[in-house]
Image (cartoon, rainbow, N blue to C red; front, side, top):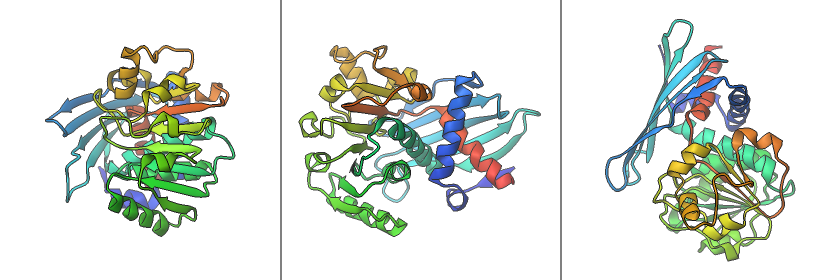
Length: 311
């Protein structure tokens, strides 16, 4: 069996690879080649959670089971830690076990990239990043992959963490002008694209601060009691894309709340799934991509890594 660490994977597998592999799994999904179950989330206490995610792809002939822990209060260990077991479906042999913290972040960045490429203005040049924790870096890389970003506005409740994030982007070779903002309103006022990656229980920006045309990626809130995106923004969005609509109905807190307030419908005419994004036209005004995670995206990048190392 092949064992791969996050560090080994990072050396050979990039955001470009992830975008390619996620696009391919969306094709397989549309061709009914994917078999999956909704992920199981076990909440351990007020903050810590364990997630279990299975998936089978009868096109690539692989299956995975991913286990991921989310411990937001970790200081010396990563907040999110994951491992994924790959099984090939000719003989049922378990062929690889991969650390998956990096891959979780990367596949999320790839999903945001695909949604942003379709929904945001082609001339979008300013990105706002709200929340500079574990998921934010690869999410930003995804946007940089599909848009010519000239300015990045960073906001984090702890400004020191935003400064650290700025240095990380610069050290990676990002050439955009990077501003550390003292409020979320300041960060989004000029933004064409807004990335949210927080574990907030209240919206992290106000609708009144947004431009009339803006694309928003929300990847942080993953439980029913979490909130990131302003409900007025949800109510006025022209297009809303979910990575997995059924999963969002169980876990996307701000959308669950908006539905209860009759400000949003999961079966509304403006709602589509990411695998159907190719069939929609870019709409003006506000567009939103919301991710809660689904196992077939993990399968895409995990099998992509395995095939790269196997060659």
